[in-house]
Image 1 (cartoon, one colour):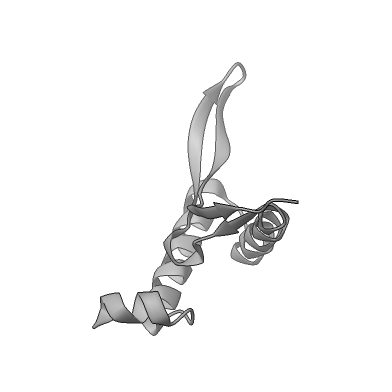
Image 2 (cartoon, rainbow, N blue to C red):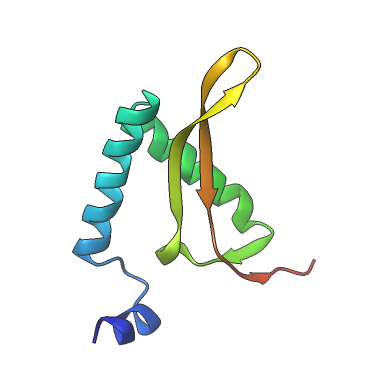
Length: 89
């Protein structure tokens, strides 16, 4: 039944909302980024990308990881955003 809901219903389920909130909490803990700021960044990225491609918002993943740079370890934003279709202008 859950599979059918994903195809026919674009509204996120309570499970998806809770999962996203948990991810935001983990992101905050790992990258010391305020969850509200992370949500605004996510919305801005999606708004910009949506101008050029159709995205699958039900399977997106955003995470803050740590990456090595010349100065040491630095946080990095990693986004996995499935693309459904490229918009032709």
